[in-house]
Length: 228
Image (tube, rainbow, N blue to C red):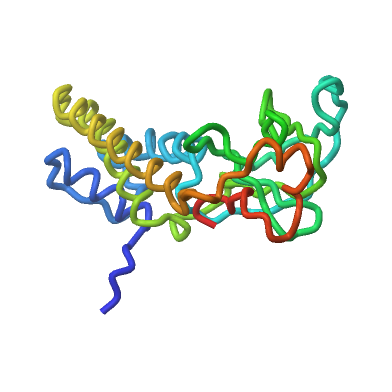
């Protein structure tokens, strides 16, 4: 027996419909009925919003970046355009290919900092950095086959919350489902950020940073991107 979940759009829609006490299920999202219309209205925006929020351990793409005019040359050496299908920047693979740095905040400050500054910054649609490398990111152009169980559960809860307002028009149920979704989001992100948590003796001192000892093959301060 395989417990790999059925992550098809129809399966996700039917789970959400079941949570709002709508007995009719869908065999296709192209159905002309009111249930399918409501699902189509909310499904893509919900998934897009979640993809923009975090990595979730989903499949990532790696692409070389295209240089653009750098208006922050006093702060960053390079400025790059982001891929048109980028939903969330996951990590930055160094030019040597031996390591990657993460965009996430962790305990005791921002992970992947050097000399008090993040390795890269995503701002106003551009990637700014002082290093050369390729961007790893979550793409909008993924399918339900790339969803894991955690992400699917959050999609179901958020979709059910929207459907509760449209179908039974139950504001209390919608609010309760939205709170459940937010709780699952918080738990998932926390678990992601705590994966491979630093332990005593693994922290790099300011003296070591200044001496430049932090840039070697065996230095483990740069964490791999969550979910990689």
